[in-house]
Image (cartoon, rainbow, N blue to C red):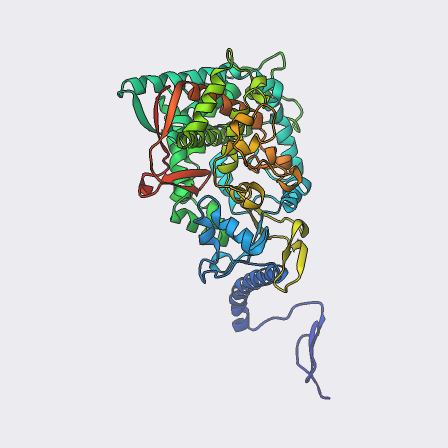
Length: 574
């Protein structure tokens, strides 16, 4: 074998053995010819995107291979995969159809050639993700910037076990049962203001009025959260400019998320996540409501007073934290502003939606509405927090609220991502592509997971007539509730067959990141329904309503989609 040695400086010797390899010895780099030196930047510039492309291909291949045996629905689109069909879903019917086809866990072909998406509706896998291994499944990188722009850097946005637990421990006392119990007078005051405004409108309109239920309830819930959490009256029911700007601005943002452009934008952000940092008008517009609230928050904080007796209202808690001497416990003003944004946005929109859907479903079911009114009118005096918290005080009201929360969860779909490799256990085995049964699914770091809350809440295997508004399902077998049930009515499944969330539904999520303000939301929700149903009659207007999900689940009238979020209800005095 011939050995060839090139003539180079002694400090750098290259030995080439024909047919074998190149060996390099020496301590210093050679002096490259000028032409080669000039080409090095070009070589590096070409190598970087090739490395990135290679990494993307490897990641895509790894995830594709890992989910290879997981079943998938038939007939994906070449361009959109299954994602456009998923996005166009109405009332969760498509997810439920896929549950029947593939089982309660399956993969979707993602749009634009992205790696497959894992969809989880299995109750054991859900508890593993949300309750047992919570911090391994943060929001996906696409949604974290969106959450920040919509709700600020608050409890919904924060990730990581230490940071989340610290923040939740700070604000949770404001929503304890003892503290929410004290909020009754503020909540009733807002409810009565809404009642008076609606009564005047009806009497001035010949005895009845058709209203958009979402525009009716949002001002009330915004006023409630402002008063009980921050001691601030938005007076939105009184048509104040600052309150109207928040409710209308949020409605417009939610509508944008329901449009085709909103869906496409999420796909673009998944491909190029760095776009969110660019000063683009469309990106900045998503934060318009949060920025408006943040400016208002400065005035709320400057006028806020600390309850020196250790008050546990949210404003006092935040102001005391701001005055802490220990830097590890101190909360700066910017974080306080973000907390205000989070609780004003999330605290008013979700309860407003639940209340609006309840008025609409009661309008479609006049017999249930009449029975509910009779139950409410039979109670002497004004119910307290404890009266509403006891399901035996108003069993039908409790059932009506649970049924609406089941059918219309504010967050219809969640998107998570695995932070580390994991194995998801399944309650119900799924049949793999190879024909064998799978009792668990291995997931790789970076795997995107969709959680279809509305599909889980309307799963026919659990709820039977899942698309039917039937509060009696919550009352079957309960003493004294026979009058609300018909012969043959089916009750609830055993608890171990339902999800681990509140009341066996997924509307408030479950585990350490479940809704921190759930007690307040339920109290406020029931006070509003109690006040409105006692005093008004709600009727169906006969329009066909479809559901769309953007930031939250919201309705549109079929044939009037360009009108945006709309849920018309006819109202008259009781």
